[in-house]
Length: 182
Image 1 (spheres, rainbow, N blue to C red):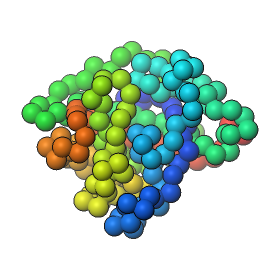
Image 2 (image 1 turned 135 degrees about the horizontal axis):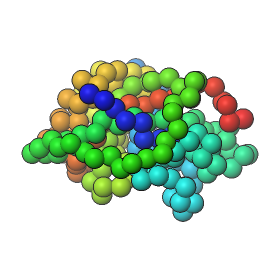
Image 3 (image 1 turned 45 degrees about the vertical axis):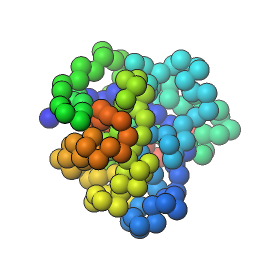
Image 4 (image 1 turned 30 degrees about the horizontal axis):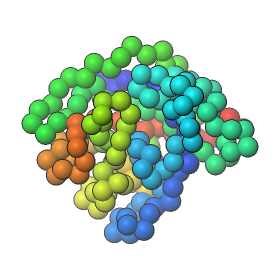
């Protein structure tokens, strides 16, 4: 299955919240949602994001974070599986045409997430961190799963476990290894 690079996004990475104490392997939350790890304030109002609600280039992603605050943020890149997982069906998902720059050196895959998109635009909740589901899956220290097959099974499970309204999508998460924005 081919995953599609949809863009870049900066976040303030949160340490493991108290409610995930039963998932001791988790150290930080790299989920696609911003329920735990924060997005930049007012990023949507700047209207620099693409149709997938992330940014086409690392430079554009950093442009929504003030220079004095950049040290607090980590830059992520996302590749998405073009399928939606609903309660009763799975369907191909036509990703809009995007102008995303190729993944540059310095980004490393850190795992996979399943996140809901019930409103059809932005990513919403990642049940691994938002709904305490990390205790039920083999997560890594970033509160993500290590492989695509587990992420797909997880997306299917989340639709029937009613963690959050679906549909769900599967996203591979990449982290920028060095602070090239500084």
